[in-house]
Image 1 (cartoon, rainbow, N blue to C red):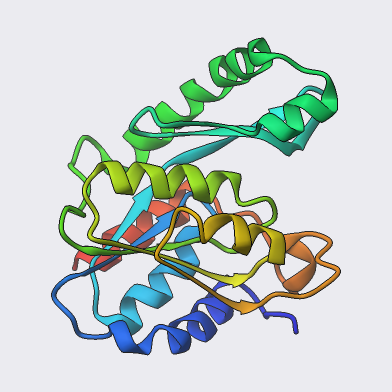
Image 2: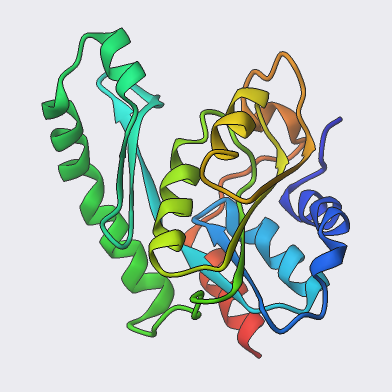
Length: 212
């Protein structure tokens, strides 16, 4: 199964979340940047508020796509000890990666929200959306952030995911929903016809449209 693009994926995902439609206790959060177009389709279908959640993957030295951890906008940090051990790296690798990624996280936060507060998640059902899950590191950091904010229930929702990532996230979320869990997984982009990178302007425009 391949999705035409992120909007197509969002519509397919929204169909799996129909039980959450038209409720006053549901908010939808998209992981920036690629998760936001998917989340926008979900929020539209569910008639729920939309917001962005900032998480940055911490890539391994020389292997930026391999996550050794992740950081979220509230300062939540996630360390993948298994990957660090396999690569023979210490915690100083996390510190260096965090120093690299924190400025970009802060820049995006300012660009997307412009100083406005995010949606309230305390006491709400928080549906956290990305365009796919490979390792699940960024999504786990997102879930821990929302748990710290007092979300009543955490629902991880993605169009496509590695089965191992789903299993990992079931330890931190109340529910994990994936339209497809192919094996072998390869990479998130392999399951899209058009996986063009989402840019800042698209994120800003989608968030603005959701508030109108």
